[in-house]
View (cartoon, rainbow, N blue to C red):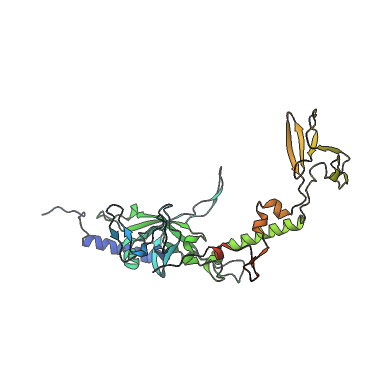
Length: 365
């Protein structure tokens, strides 16, 4: 009588019996997961950059033999868009959505205060799927780049009753065989993936859409527009509080009085009755704590004597607005001038958006 052994070098009936039982467990107790299958980078078309190859040209070469490969110009998951940075910024996803069942341990999301700041813990999920089910449904196992939507985490109870439900998307960061998925036959049955929440970045534009599309998922899950509104409100409030760029000198001697002597280069009179000396060079014998305004600086600059140094305190900026004092290239950023092009006298705005100036290259194939 031969010895009994569950181990066989091939997949026997024992393997398929256990595999079907494990698949049934996922079907009964697993949660639904909608998979957006990553199918490769977007085709960049003709390019002279060797770091960004054009796979659709059919001129892809083997680095060892120099022979032409991929003559049909197929772009799939094995291709890399940017060989310099080793990344796929423009990802292409299957238009069909695959439904599978997965299992993970639900835990509370708590904030953890560390020496580096406040971090959200347990924001990364480790989810397991049945390996053969992945192959049967998708044609392959889950891989980094695939996006998974968990419908049971859909947030449909927002404070704004008119707001659309917010879906929860995760991207696969890593995938491997799960240690708990080996059966008595020593064959693996479970595929374990590491998931992290996606952001409204360039990589997922094929799924989320763009900000210009009002009904896109990008505008639903992203806080970009709200943060931009807050930033614009801060700028508008600063412009209203300081429209002409008046110096904020309240913290210096209670503020400077508008005295005619300011323009003549004589001593400045301050609101507390104190006077400040000014000139084109520092005094020869200063005392500790003396203040001095250098009139040869543009704008005029206030210094204080501390030890053996004249410490700079304040620049009297009066000829600029709040934005011109804040932005180094304010005249370029907020350029509202027009220029005349050609002999026909056609005016064109000097400030143009990058999206209109640098047009994307059309896809080939």
